[in-house]
Image (cartoon, rainbow, N blue to C red; front, side, top):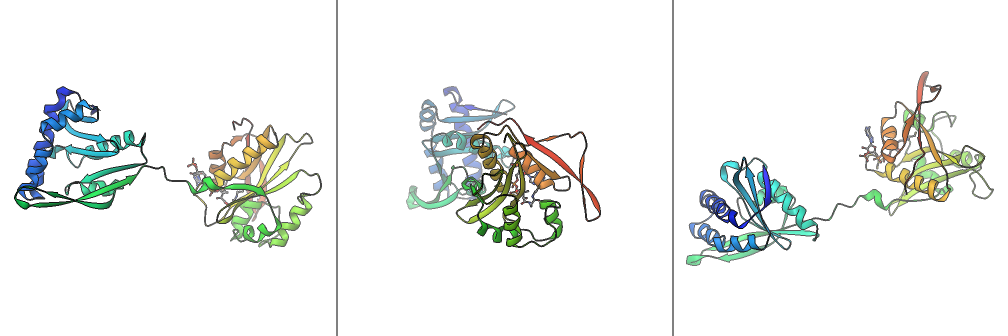
Amino acid sequence: MEYRLAKLEDAKDIFEIVQDTIKRIYPKYYLPEIADMFCEFHNKENIVEDIENGNTYILLENNKPIGTGTMKGNHILRVYVLPEFQGKGFGTYIMQQLEGEIGKRYDKVKIDASLPACKLYYNLGYKTVDHGIWECAGGVIQVYEMMEKSLKKAENKADSLRLRPYKNCDAKTIVSWICDEMAFRKWSADRYESFPITEDDMNQKYMNCNGDGIEPDDFYPMTAFDESGVVGHLTMRFTDKEKKILRFGFVIVDDKKRGKGYGKKMLELALKFAFDILKVSKVTLGVFENNPSAYYCYKAAGFKAISLEQDEYYHIFGEKWKCIELEVDEYES
Ligand SMILES: CC(C)(COP(=O)(O)OP(=O)(O)OC[C@H]1O[C@@H](n2cnc3c(N)ncnc32)[C@H](O)[C@@H]1OP(=O)(O)O)[C@@H](O)C(=O)NCCC(=O)NCCS
């Protein structure tokens, strides 16, 4: 398959693709006067003019011209694929190429849809925003759909996440995300005595870890939030006197918002804080082998697994849970 900008010598092929397709397909959808008007609209002069303006493309399969598409500003027009090559993805391919070009300069793409093609455009994400009226020979009227599609990249909700120091009042929300004992142990290992924990348990623990924010300390509980409120939480703790190595712990995201990129975003923010503000040279953390979503989230945020001289195990529910050690030591802000 070859898709390229059309040259003047392609005008005849493009004209034939368009005329042939209209004559074979449109009579099934339109009155003859309307099909004739389409043929007239896509006459040779108009095609040559668009090729000269450098905005018409041709698609070849095994060197045979089989499809075409044109753009004018943010408008797509004259997308045609020969009937015997339809239903094979060529039309979608032409549309995506044109959208790619238009997307470099515009946020929105427009198309006037013919009846045989409107379902394809709908499937590609176009929505009807208005109707146009075209008066053909003999007083025959054609009503067509004017469709549009936004080319703006879908905003990732997690992008609005921010990080701030933990407040005691966050505990109520955070403990509500831990719904069963298995999840509780994967999150906290043996750091809490029993399940479930209350907000007071969490606040007491953090106070004991010198996390009151008043004394000069080495323990920083953090909260991730967005416009909806508290979304995630983690702790940061220096593990060396020089305060060059920081360990993350108690990493957790709202149980109703998992798998949507919030965990990764929160860790990226925490890493940025650690390296740019706290000026650490390394961030470490541990994750249980039986917690793949956490493991892969850490990997996605830039952590690398490292091998320890001796594997670390925790005894939980009468089982031996292996803890994988991960770290980030090269960070580009
Ligand atoms: C661990 C936790 C914080 C991750 O947060 P999250 O918001 O669910 O994770 P994200 O949606 O940000 O996932 C980020 C990445 O991990 C990947 N990922 C998540 N689960 C995965 C899985 N089971 N297999 C493969 N990849 C997975 C995602 O595909 C994404 O990668 P990408 O950006 O390259 O596509 C969250 O699941 C949680 O709160 N778990 C309960 C508490 C816990 O166990 N904490 C771990 C303590 S060590």
